[in-house]
Length: 308
Ligand code: CP
Image (cartoon, rainbow, N blue to C red; front, side, top):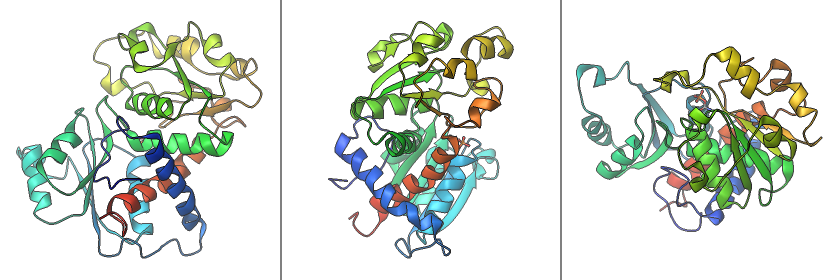
């Protein structure tokens, strides 16, 4: 990155040069994960705390692997096993963690802005691993790395993001990051799951599944986030799958080289059919592999030897 950055709280305000530096660093660190001994001493003596208030498979595991592959010491804390269950506040928890001198706290929380609150109260580096419906910046970065690997560029690509745009921090980080990198982003989903004034995010709104897919270089399907749906915003999962799920029939009308993505976890048969998820268009497991590389890059850039 061009200037030292202490935190990664979102992709809002991260420049194209910084994104390029992160993706280039991830490319250079990726081969460590294919070595017989997957470890380098770069972050020896550094301490990373993983503080996850919400469930996670991909983000938590890949951050832990990234830290271990760079030889950092790691500690994991979850909401259910921490003293939050005894009524301790988030800020008190953070101040107590800070007293143990970590170098970096990686935080996932159901409240939008929680990592920003931490960053205002404690001096160690913070990475947002997903905050409510706000941002999931490392997912946006790993998605951009995956697209860049497949298509060779981000600038000028047509990327369609389909599904629950309102509740998706993945959509938000991708929209911000892809716009910064010069891609042309459109969205499609149930009207009840599109945020008001969605165009103000710098996207076009497609009128149908066909319109969303036919010209796209990349189709990014989003998870239906049932845990964030307080009201009934569509009649049933069956109807959602029929109207907004991606099937092979849709991809037959798409560009032959179209790439299909999903951040996971997939609701198979809802957001996409198993044939699509496992088919030749899909780069879903490449996204997961790139998650380790991008998170290694961020640890290196934020707390590595060249960070201070
Ligand atoms: N994509 C993503 O954030 O997955 P997890 O919830 O499993 O971390």
